[in-house]
Image (cartoon, rainbow, N blue to C red; front, side):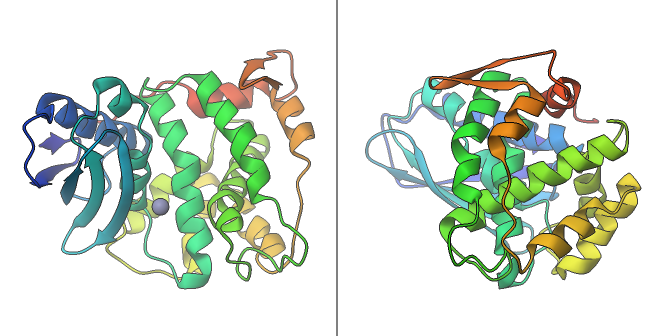
Length: 278
Ligand SMILES: [Zn+2]
C-alpha cells in the first residue's frame, strides 16, 4: 500500500473466511493518512504491518519496532466491523511511535506520552475524530498522569499512569506553552516535525539533543524548560483550571466548548484540519 511518503506491506497471519479485507485495508490507509497529515508525511519509508487475526472483533495489542524500516504487530478480530475500525485508536498510536527516535528506558514516558497525545489530534486533523471526542478523551485521561504520593518525576517514576498519561500531559503543557509564547503561530507539532526531520524511530537519541531540536524549530525553549522542571520532581497541574482556560466544559461523558474562554483559539488550533503534503 502506498501512503504519503512511503509504503506499508500488510501481512495477514492466520486464515479467516469472515474477514472484511476491504474494511481492513481502508483502516490501514486512514490510520496512515492521519499520521502523515500530522507529520507532513508518513514517518518511515517502508513499514511492515503484521496483522495477527484472532476470533471475535475489535483491535488490540499493538507493538512497534524499528527493524530495517518500521515493524508493527497488531491483533485484529476477524469479525471487526467498519464502525469498529473507524473507532480504533491503536494503529494510529503505533504508527506515531515511528516518528520519534528511540530513547533510553528512563524516557519511555516521552515515547508513550507522545503517541498518546498525538493520536487523537492526528485523527481529528485528518477529519476522522470529532473535537468533542478529542477533548473528552483528554479530560478523562489526563488525571491519570498526575503525580501520586511518592512520585519522583517523569524520569524516575515508571508507573503506567505516569508513562502514558504523565507523558501525554507533558506534551499538552508543552504544546500550550509554545503556542502562548509564539502568539499561536507555532506548536508542538512543528517541534515534532523538526525532530522527525532529524531522525525517525530507526535512530537512537538522548532526550537532550531531541528536545533542543524541537525548541530550535519553534524558537522558544519550552521543551527543555518543562523537562528540567518535571524530570526528577513531581509537578502537579490544576487540570480543572486548564480546561476552563481552554474552554473545555465537561458534560457527563462528553464535553461542550466555550468559545469565549481566554485560550479557545489555541484549543481550536490543535485540531484544525490539515492536509499531508503530497
Ligand atoms: Zn505505545
